[in-house]
Length: 143
Image 1: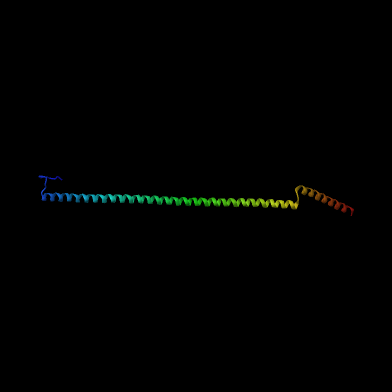
Image 2: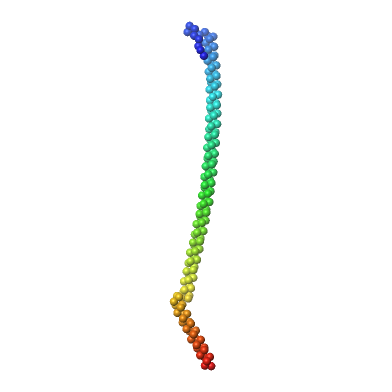
């Protein structure tokens, strides 16, 4: 756009034409800027939607991973608890069996007596049986 100056003055018609031309250029520029801004805003919106969607997918994946890990940990804790309960039960049963066996042994030794006394008792019993059998033989002979 070139301004033509004559005697440092423009005629009113030329000034009006020039102003209309400038006004038209400004309208075209405004329209172009508006379209460009609208396109830029649309591009930004699309990129923002993509980023939000990516963040949501990553968040969902993270949440699913955390849930899976939580379930896995719960299963391991349950298994460990069951193993511990089984071990406690087995240990308790073993201890109870040992205690019962000891009590039975103590009761048996109390009823029978100590083993050295038991051996002497067996000897005395055997000797008494021999005497009785000799007496029985002798009594048969006398008759």
